[in-house]
Image (cartoon, rainbow over all chains, first blue to last red; front, top):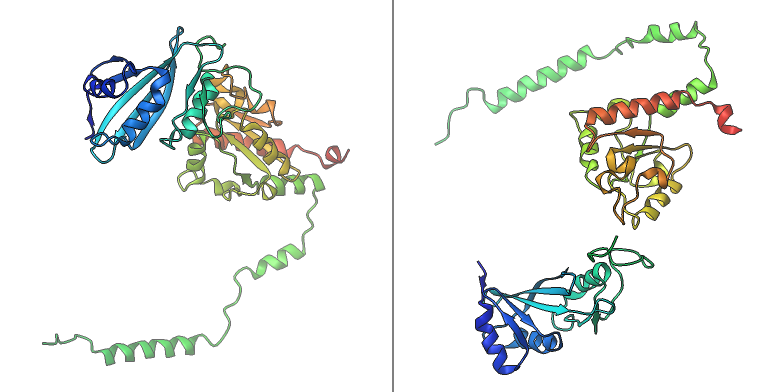
Length: 146
Length: 196
């Protein structure tokens, strides 16, 4: 079975390399600053000993005050996993960097989050609605959608 | 070491040869058709019926369903098709993938607005005369997804529906009952009304 890596252990490693990137770390996840997501993701993808080469999924939740985007990563080489979280406080124009350039599997899932929660992913090659149709009003997975 | 055969190959071949020769000798004449009397009977009869009755009979006894199964009700339809419930009893066991060859749409499943244009198109591609059975709660009214932003609240928003079969999903018996109701409906159709 895939071993879940301790968030706090990796947090120290990341903090050495990217000071201030980790906001919070727990036993099973890491909360990152949105601005440093791309740099940290790139590092996790290639760093020897970590090699997170596979993105299981990207998903997002609306917590009223902010959106939280969750990335579940796995290293097929070392058979270990890690959960990254990023928060987005802007409700009008939420935006985060896209990780498609690092993990191609994020493509459709980022489009789905864009479609249902309205979070824009900067640098996504084809950010269009995927489940609903063009011209649909609003984003149905937002808590204030009625 | 070879096991001794009770009947040698030679003996089996000889027996087979005798059998064939006997059958050949017995089968020189033609066996008379047991239904020959039927021709004579028919010759002496005149059947009187209306064009409507013949046409409606022909139509309702050979309905060809078209593939349009967006969700889980399809499994009940598949069961209805299969040997246990045997839809071929009603002359309709073949489901066509091409709408041009079908005249009955059994709408088995939830329809989303994103899928709706395709279903409407399939319906429009079917040749007249054509019928629609709304199968299951979702097909009738949207079911539990009725108030959703993405679900069509009933196929009758998109296409005209002839028979509604309630259930979630309806059992095969229910679907068969719906089909029989459609048969009755087709039986009442008049050619004169149609051409008006």
